[in-house]
Image 1 (cartoon, rainbow, N blue to C red):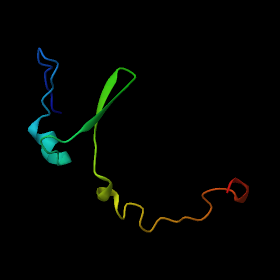
Image 2: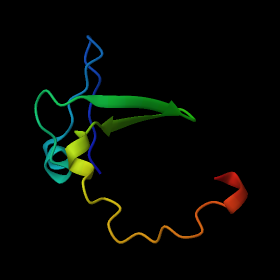
Image 3: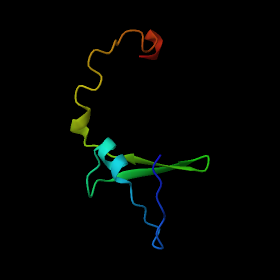
Length: 68
């Protein structure tokens, strides 16, 4: 488990092992979410990164016919 410290300017350095594992780049934007006293940093990805994300997914029976 990696740990980090909040600087006097409230900055956080993401440990190298985490940056490598998530392939984070300098200047990349992140969404910050808090829930139940936990802070989540979610890396934003360009929309092109999701191309083919749902390939092969079954699309039948997702909604009832009356909902369409």
